[in-house]
Image (cartoon, rainbow, N blue to C red):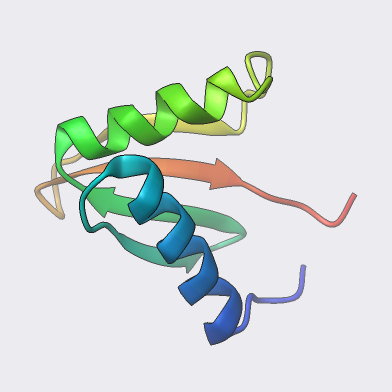
Length: 80
């Protein structure tokens, strides 16, 4: 997989911040996009993402990172 460009990550961060209704930080880690933010922000993104027809997508997750001490939304991507 080709790593995302800074422009692509910035665009994704802008879109997810709009979905969340508050600022989130986005990073690409090992082929997954992660949005870090409040619990409510990550759940809003998750709910809106699923409302767009991605109910069966097992590559979409929300959770809490103990080592980063923050909530996250993750979206696995591939070139397939």
